[in-house]
Length: 61
Image (cartoon, rainbow, N blue to C red; front, side, top):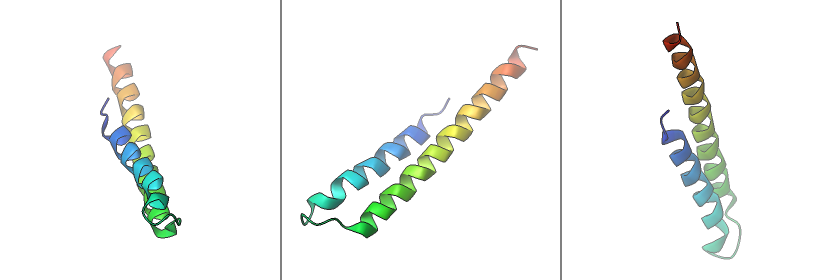
């Protein structure tokens, strides 16, 4: 299973965590970008997990 989805999710969570610390006010545009990046990483992680499960079932035949 590829770990790229987890990497993208962690980058998105870092963007969300950093957004209020720059000016001590929440930058909602940066939070939105972080949420979108996290969702993209989650979707990629789920697809990779599903594909790995599908390939594992084919090896058992």
